[in-house]
Each structure stands twice: as C-alpha cells, then as structure tokens.
Length: 173
Image 1 (spheres, rainbow, N blue to C red):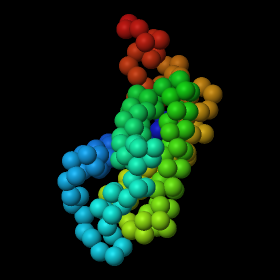
Image 2 (image 1 turned 180 degrees about the horizontal axis):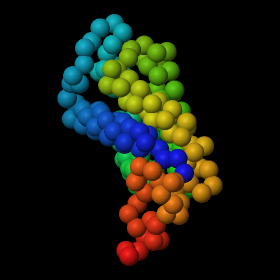
Image 3 (image 1 turned 120 degrees about the vertical axis):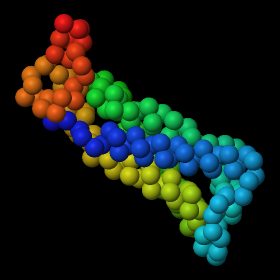
Image 4 (image 1 turned 135 degrees about the vertical axis):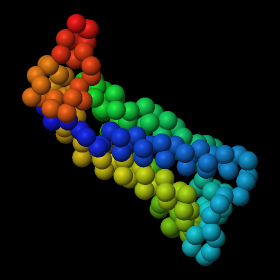
C-alpha cells in the first residue's frame, strides 16, 4: 500500500498555525488589545475585527476559528491519518469543506461589505484553503477500501511507517 508522506505533518503544522492565529484573534477580540497590523485604506484589521460581520449569532468569528482548528489539529495528527476508521477521514474532509465555505463568506464580507482586509484573517483564510486542498486531494486515497489496514507484508510498508506490532495484529511477539 502506498503511504501518505508529507500530508499528515503538513496539515498538522497548518492546523497548529491556524490555531495560533485564531487564539491571538480571540484574545484581541475579548481584551480589546490593538492588533499588530498595518493600517491604510485597504488594510485595516481593527475595522474588520470590530465590524458587525466579526460576529455570527453573537459568537465572535475568531472563536469560530478556534472551534474549527481545535478538532482539525486532532484530525490531522499522523495517527488520525493512518486510521482505518473512515469516519475520521470523512470528518476531516467535512470540516475542511465547512472551513472553505466560511472563508468564502468572510472574504466576501471583507471585500464587499466592510471594504477592508485584515492580514491576520487573511492568514487564517490561506491556512484553511491549503488544508482544504491537501485534504480534498488526499480523500480518494484515504477513503479507498482497505486504507489504514496493514497485513505485515514488508513490500507494502517499504519505509517502515506502519504502526509497531501491525504484523502481529498489534500484539507483541
């Protein structure tokens, strides 16, 4: 079986970056601390993060970012990528689709309603889009029947990435 090599670590790093930026944006939302961001006619983080569009149903968008990235970190752990449980891969895929839907709304709000761009928010948008691309392009592979199973044949695990004990059904010999 072919293994995913760079996707698990890349998506984990991207998720951690997104979690960090979302945490920063959430803190600045509640502490009313000025964001470290340049400000001109087009770039204005404060205008974006204090606009009516910065909350959905009274929930700060930055907090929704946390609610996106916390499970995404767990779903992008290498162990989750190796899992034979299709529900994990479907949850990762569904969450990435929801994330892209959200950034389409947020980018539209920035460009057409608020008429300003937040660089921190744009960073989260880029991270979310990259996660989406990697997850969607990996989906046919990880959702294929038999993915995540390993029968102990060395020719199917040439780089030794199968979990230890896989050849003996997870039991130590």
